[in-house]
Structure formats: structure tokens, C-alpha cells
Length: 253
Image (cartoon, rainbow, N blue to C red; front, side, top):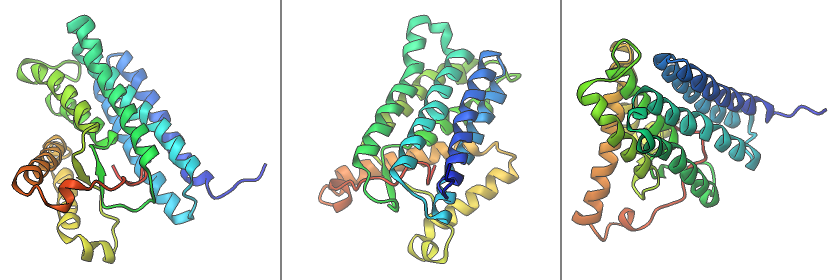
């Protein structure tokens, strides 16, 4: 059997999928903090497979498809099961329906992404990427959980609206920037985005991850406010009318 360079990024994609399964297993055992961290680890592998694809120059349609299959497990099914097990099961059938939206809308978003995909280097996504949706949900759970096994008070009441909001924003037309590519060219082209990302990483490190949810909340809110501004305050703005195809999956979170 001939081994090609494409094996390298595919290995990271498979590790992404495996972490999604481990998250589901941990959540089924009531280990919700561990389940959340496995989803975050899946996101790390999801980013690395894109980096490896660039380094090995092995981007392909196969890579796009297997990446999407991995993403629906790690960032769709895993967070959906997690929010159901940690709290939404209290709402019986409604809780099941609400939690399933993270998986269903995520699958729709990935399918739409794949059929619209043209090229691998765009500046933004149309609709919130499914890994970002998953990260917003798990960072919320990591920030507000009580003793690692439940949500109480206002955080418990906010989980269902948060899940619905993330699900709808994934299939929206709201524009979200991709991550910077860590190069001098990227810094010159998008200095604000690159510097903001750098300081965000420092903030996450210095707060030991406690700032993660608030940064994702700011990221999601900024995209929404920018969309509203372009839609109403500048209706003739080119970006308000034209939505380019998105960047390839896994290359940015």
C-alpha cells in the first residue's frame, strides 16, 4: 500500500474524530469537565490538520470530506450530547430537541460549506463555524459548572437559549473572520485581527482558560453587530451584499 503525504493531515483529522467519541463517553459517565476538554482537544487537532495539509501541500477534496465527517462528531454530536446530559434532560422531549439543534444545524452548515467551497484561503466564513459554536458551549460549561457535574441558577437557565442561538447563527449569513495565518504577510494585511488574536491567546493563558467563554462571546457578538451595522447603517456596502464562499474546514476554528 502506497503511503502519501495526505496521511499526515488525515491522521490529525482522525484524532479529532476520536476526541469527539471520547467526549461522548465521558459525558455519558457524568464527567462533564473532561468531556468539555476533549472537545477543545478535538479543536486543536482540527486546526493542526489544516496546518499539516499546507506544510505537506496535500489539500484535497478527500481531506475536506473527512474533515466535515469528523467535525459533525466532535463539534456537533459531542456538544449536543454534553448539553443534554448536564442539564437539558430536565426538559424531557424539549431538552432533547434543543440539544439536537447543535448537531443538526452544524450538519447543515457543513453541507452548505462543502457545496459552496471554492479555494482554501478566504478571509472569512459565512455563518459561525461549527468548532466555534462548540467552543462557545463548552467554555460556558467550564466557566459556570458547579463541582464539575451540574449547572445552577442563571447559567442553567441560559444553556438552552445559548444552544439555540449558536445553532441559528451557524446557518445564518453573518460573516465571521478566519484565524490569522501567523506570517508577516498576514500581519501586514490584517494587523488588527492578528494583534487581537495574539493578545487573546495571552489572556487565555494568564487567566488559565477562564477568559475563554468571554472571548468567544465577544467574537460572536462582534460578528452579529457588524452584520447589523452593514445591513442597516450601510445597506449599499459591498460586504453587506456579497458573501464569498468560506474557507476550507479545519483550517481555522
